[in-house]
Amino acid sequence: MKYLFVFLSCTVLVVGLSGCTVLAIADAAGSAVVYGVKTTVNVLDAVTPDIINKKKN
Image (cartoon, rainbow, N blue to C red; front, side, top):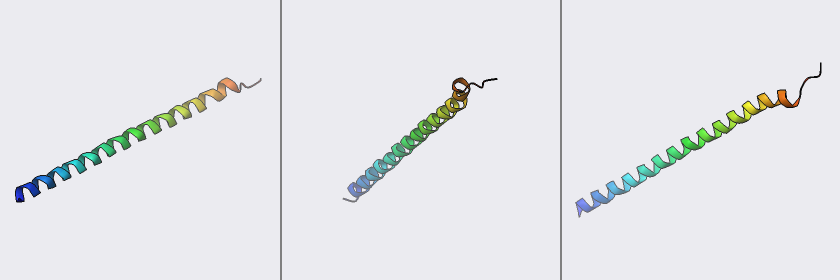
């Protein structure tokens, strides 16, 4: 009976830790996507005013 309890405890612990790992990876991937989009928007914002708003000399 004691071995069954230890086995079930270890199983629950492993499943819990793997769930945390999946959440951490998803969080890192989401952050990378957000920062990538922000960088793209900043680059486009820096480039397009020169194309659209040409100075008249």
